[in-house]
Length: 329
Image 1: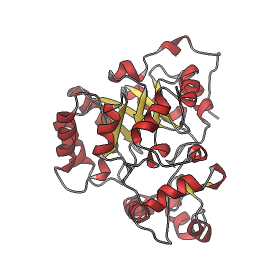
Image 2: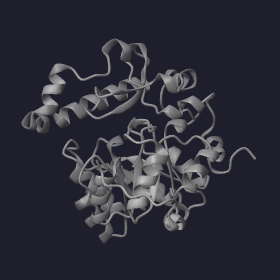
Image 3: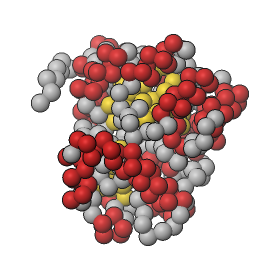
Image 4: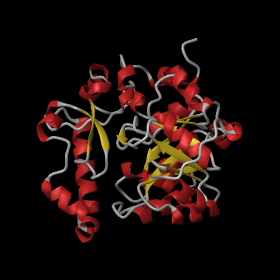
């Protein structure tokens, strides 16, 4: 059990929020979703008062990441970021880090690994680093390494998710850490955003609801599924990357199940095999997500969080942003 301290609402609830941290109008980040978040979506986000981040993994060729960062910087002076996977499964980590440092976005969101090198090098060139965390243990480690903010990934998040509900994770992190905590998971409305900020969140990283936008590049079938299915259709699977991932419980997911196979369990329990197979498992999972996102096939993995419950139609991205930032006024 973690040694958690609670003492009611923090006085540091007035802690810097995303508006001040990133000099943006509203405390929202359009989340970095693999193969979903595009430069065009980031530009719309910046035009509508929020920030956004793109996964470095979206770019397969050397130079593409830096080119995109520079293109967005030429389009707008507003803050945007890049998501970087910092564990050994990312074979392109060194090249991606170099391109990020050379082109200097406002911030980097680290995921799935030790961010020590990233934090050290990014700070040398004035780039902020926000770290994805799912619990207090890792949050304290990244805080000690000098992270500028934490992104608390909760159990409502789409894709890779945490273990705590949104309010509980925000309370755990704000009560025990001294740097800002950004919520990730479960936000679809201005009411959701205000509720989380009232208990100490510095803002929110929002993903699932933006997949159901007109500008989202995924297939019509994926978008229709976001409208058709509800929160009771969201399940956890380890079959994509070995880590808990929330997906829509399609007929294909029901057929293959969500629990690891004997071979997958063997790999995860054997230290040597786990290290050797991690990048292969990750690459295989990425390929499955790519096929599912853009092609109407039976073998479908559609990532989504339980906030799918509040998606009722496909809307322009700017309209969704407005609903989250100012509500239906």
